[in-house]
Each structure stands twice: as C-alpha cells, then as structure tokens.
Image (cartoon, rainbow, N blue to C red):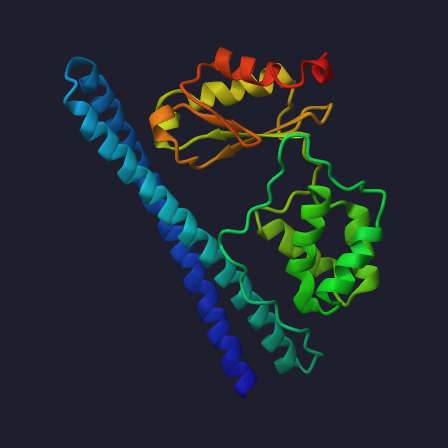
Length: 281
C-alpha cells in the first residue's frame, strides 16, 4: 500500500513538473515578441534621442535577468521530473512485485558546466581504460548513472557508444537507463566536439541585432550541414546559447574563452579564420 501511495505521489510530481515546464515555455513564447518589439523601438529612438540609452540598457538587463531566471527554473524542473520519473518506475515495479533498481541520485548543482578550452586535448574514444577508472570511482549501482555519464563526457567531450557499452558491461546500469538519461539531459552529447567551441549568443539583444545571420554565416563558411554542429575536420563546434551576459556587446560570440562583440556576419567569420590558420589551410 505504501508503494502504491508513493507511486501516486511520484506521478503527481511528474505531472506537476511537466505542467510547470510547459507553462514557463508558453509564457516565454508569449513575451519574447513583445520584448523584441520594445528593444527595437528603443534602439530606433536611441538613434534620435541619446537619453533613451538608459532605458534601452534597463530593458536589456530586465530581459536578460528574466532569461537567466527561467533557465535556472528549467534546469531544476527537469531534474525534478527525472527524480519523480525514477521514483514512479521504482514504486511501480515494487507494486508489480519486480526487483527494484536503486533510485537516481539527487540533482547535481545547476552550475555544472562542461567546457573545453582552446586546444583542449580530449580522451581517445578507442581507449576505454578511463571508463573503468570512472566506474571504479563513481560506483557500479544504477544510482551512479548520471555521475558516470558526466565523467565520461568530461573525458571524451561526448558519449562514445563503445564507452557506454563498457558501462553496461561493468555496472548494473542498463542500456535503457543510459539512453533515457543521456537523451533527456540536454548537455549530454552523442557526437564528438571540435577542438574549438564557438558559442553564439541568441539572447534578446543579440537576436534583434542579427545573431541568426551570424550563426548561419558561420555554419555556411565552416560547411556544417543540417542537423550537425561540428565541421568535418572537427576544428569548430558551433552552439547557440540563450545568453552570454554581454548584452552591451550585442551581437556577441565566444570562441573557447575569448569574447568577440559588435559583430557582423563577416566579422564573425573572420574571428574564426584568425584561429590556427595553419590547421584550417
């Protein structure tokens, strides 16, 4: 009876998390066009009246703060959904009389970021010795799935199929659990990254200043096809991000840890061409 009650509570938590995520998304979709119109109008007025610059900066800050707050809410709601889903499955199995797998771990800190600096040397996907070391360090139970996947991505830059298969062989973690977790958590990558990581800001200020054109020009010049984010030579990975916190430099991008602002599509292309020209030649 307790298991049935727990399953009901977990299901309610799942539905509440989904509802909150959906509501937050719909509010964002509703407000974004209005915010863009306000910024565009203030930019136009600022060209005629310099006193409007303070109003424009204030609007940039308000919109950026709102985006950052929404991103933090989304991360925690996503983790709440994962935790409730895991609890529901565990309790459902218990009600059905099946063996119960260990619960997923508590959510990791929202500020976990996987970053690769200029010229970063990532592990060779063919060398699986690191996977064995990670498993030995993090544990073999199902509750270690997320820490293991995070460590594998930190080492290789993505989640190689061979590494995931080795995890299944060395632990109690199933292929289904790995597939579900890695596909739900958006920061897990299934494909390799380039040597240099390019983040193009698509926040409100950058969006109205031409961020879309900049991204399209970078993808065109690097020959990155539809559905991909890394060039064939694996020199650059281009990613769209919600906000880099540099609204006064809009439109802006980061190449590894270097920020470049006040861009045009051509200037963005030149910024990448100046990096390791011998490798690009």
